[in-house]
Length: 538
Ligand code: GLN
Image (tube, rainbow, N blue to C red):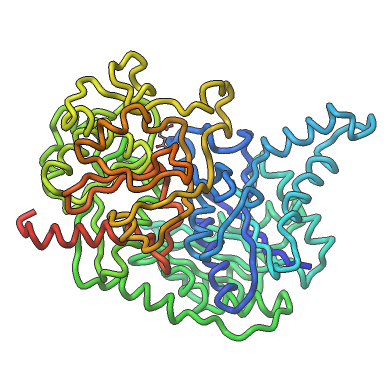
């Protein structure tokens, strides 16, 4: 039976709880433990699939087609292990499932209550990760202690703590220790309050992980230990890292966090082996050269909307010992040609996925710029659709070509709704989702990058290249180098004769990891480096 580590957050949100949880996962794996990770979200949406990027950031897609929280992306990138639909659920999903059971009569007329029924459903969702091949389950509770919605989640993990016993459960509380500039001091009071709220519920944290902008003195750590009832050596500091989030596992390990976990959970494993990880970090921190990649998206101001894309771009530089400067360019700004200059300064351009028509013409202009100027290009999902539209309009002369998503009346619907999508009414969980196979054409840039004939990649879309236009596009040099095995769906398009112009209907960014950069991102950055060498002025 697996042991449990629960990670809660206090004081404020956005402390990087997901990165901390993922870092603990990395440490346990480095000690030879078999783990599963999970994020529970106390909000009421059934899943984040229908939420706006302004509210929620990126929607991360698993192999088995769940639309999930972006923290699962951190879990996969830090641990190298795939997550699944069991790895994320929300309060909305829990209530939904309980109410469905109630309607079916499963509760035999009993009164349905938060405790035990909702708490039981949450516990079942956590325990569902257990299995013969799991040593430790790491479960992160979203939100901040003190929120009304989180209460029943905290109650559920308290109960698991009681059921499993002291040596099978560990509670880690991530908190914020602010530095007050005017007083020149750090303050422990907010942390005292948030641990007090936890104690009210019946949870005494075993480990305090303190996010802070400055180094914590021994005095401060002693004070936190005393007031929060945590042994002094279990007060761990997580100061802002200087270069990369991938430094966090090292920072935590240096303070003995994984040893504390081993002792507390009575696990006997050799010390963490972080050599490979540190080697990767060294390249990230001290690259021998740099390239500039422009990301032309709808949400250029949002850090979280393209999380996995930004990470994957950075990973792509590692094998080339190359650091990447990412230029976030708002597609709308290109439309009124404000930012065209910025496109010219880039060694490579990426157009990410998206929905709706805002910024679409700007993205299409970016595709054109890359194609006409031999700039390495990676288009993803909507980015591929834009690349196909651009090619249809400007190379094939199909004036007004478009996607029916943005223009239902277009004379040339080169991108159209997939047949199976035509009858879909509900928005949630109804796209073509998750991993699907893709066969690669010989001698294509994609095949060269992957080095194999078939791959599995994750999808999240309703629209597709219209097969009725394939011949016309191919005749002018658009190469459909990746297709579904039955040949029915275009998965990858390339422009023949261009140094590197690859666009995918799927999302390669979800599978990229710092220890295993995605082949397409690696090839894309490689091509951008070549481009920079050819065009030193750019
Ligand atoms: N809106 C497009 C579609 O549904 C692209 C989706 C995406 O980029 N994830 O096909």
